[in-house]
Image (cartoon, rainbow, N blue to C red):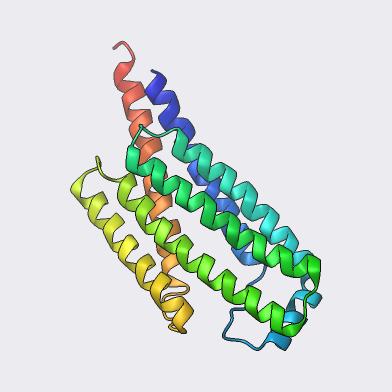
Length: 200
């Protein structure tokens, strides 16, 4: 029964993460280091409040993600991937906030944005690790789906800082769709197991 409760809670937290991340992503798209420092600095001056709100929502989404992961069956590699995810996600939140708060020069804004790009790339590596570890004990079809998502995320991680932007939208969408499928599957399995446990 405890596993069933944890499974349901994990599914709910995972869905909350997906919703919050969608809200965060819809708020604003921050510039990358491919743009000039002057344009980056100007963007943050004009959209500081929205960027701040986006990062706060991102931190709340991260909390939901951690709650999701901690309620899953224990897995050593999953814990390692979770730590990597948390560290890199917080880094991607911290840099835009630093730019908003410090209002740096164009050159400094560009440098910080390059750091943000690297943190973002590291985040996608962490995502690849997480989805791979998440499905180690899952059916083959789900493991294959996870490996496809992981591969897309790695391509995004490597290509992003080099200016290869074809996977910039594909990778996060693939991850969110995967999370949605995984969480719905958790909830369906929990419901089926609960029904099976009831006396006939």
